[in-house]
Length: 96
Image 1 (tube, one colour):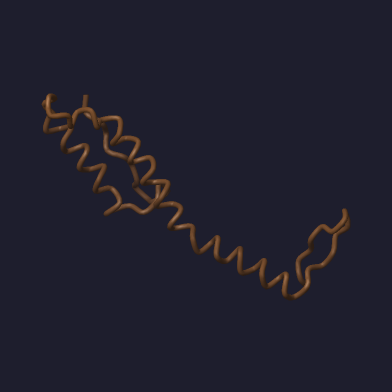
Image 2 (cartoon, rainbow, N blue to C red):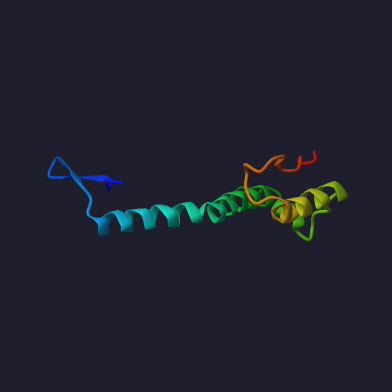
């Protein structure tokens, strides 16, 4: 199978075997890291939802049981899901 191409001075040139190998290795490494990136995305969004309710954890505020359950569900979500795209994924509903 021929190697891929690259642009050199505005001309399309076939990559050398070494360049193709490096290109394939970079693409493979990127694909292999998808699960880690997906989990980071989920955690970022989860953390933002937790931050929205952090003020309720102040010592002078009484947090409802429903809010405690909501916050715990947010913290536990990565035990069940690894990606925002997992089947059945949904953040818990924030109580009123």
